[in-house]
Image (cartoon, rainbow, N blue to C red; front, side, top):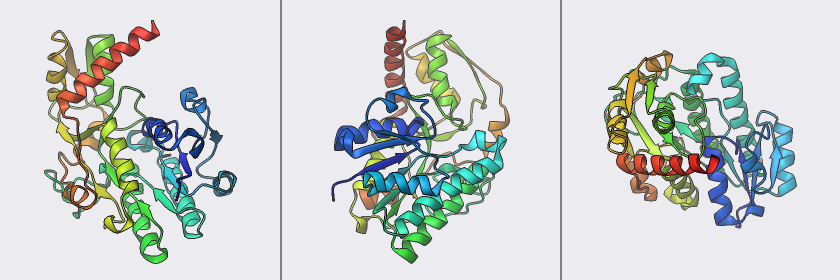
Amino acid sequence: MTPKILIIGACGQIGSELTHTLRSIHGKDNVIASDISYNNLDIVNSGIFEILDAQDYTSVKVCIDKHKINTVYLMAAMLSATGEKYPMKAWDLNMDSLFHVLNLAKEGFIKKLFWPSSIAVFGPTTPKENTPQYTIMEPSTVYGITKQVGERWCEYYHNQYGVDVRSIRYPGIISWKTLPGGGTTDYAVEIYHKAIADNTYECFLSENTQLPMMFMDDAIKATIDIMDAKPEDIKIRSSYNLSAVSFTPKEITESIQKHLPEFTVTYKPDFRQKIADSWPKSIDDSRAREDWSWKHRFSLNDITSEMLTNLKKKEKQSV
């Protein structure tokens, strides 16, 4: 089956990079990008683009029919920090969009579906060190609740209707190409931008807040790897734990200071600290590594080197 792919939420932090990578693999005519607005002209102008409201079932179905789509990546969501400000909007967007694609898959319009979960499914009662695949999950954010419920629905639709849905629990994602989208781990992107622009940064988490993180290239690789895996190798149909590195704001600061010794950080924790405190410090992703051969490439120092090098290049090009 030649993939004919629709990416819903293609203008977001992960969606935009996923779009470029999938187009480089499958050709730009086989990867349809969509979002609710034209706010990312790079994506809009790089191939076929549709304005699409992920909450509108009819619009999604029409788009799938029009382009003869067989594979969908649902990347539209309201993230953790933004979701706490607009809880009902977060619930409606995150759940409606998932139900629409699950039902379209159930009805045979979609053959394969990717839906991202998150470390936000875990909560304050979850074991924080080396958090196992199966454990206590009592999320304390609206975003986390939608992800936990979403995992259950994905598993249900697979077991009851044979829907080929695949999912991974993303940790914090770090990228130099796109700005973060309202999550609790956004500091780990902002800090690099501020290091180059201002040589100083005020961090909204405390210096010893350890969280699981991942470089965008690894996140994209994991997403494509799980979708390319044979169906029989995907043994978990809720969502797989996924991990690369875990670090604190203090450790990322020290990593940056190896390149920029004058860089300074101050700490002013805000409402996101409480969210971060409810999440794991490190993740056991052995099932992903066993079932579909997941393997990350980038360490913290690798990430810092990539971020600073590419942000400096970007800054020079914009001058």
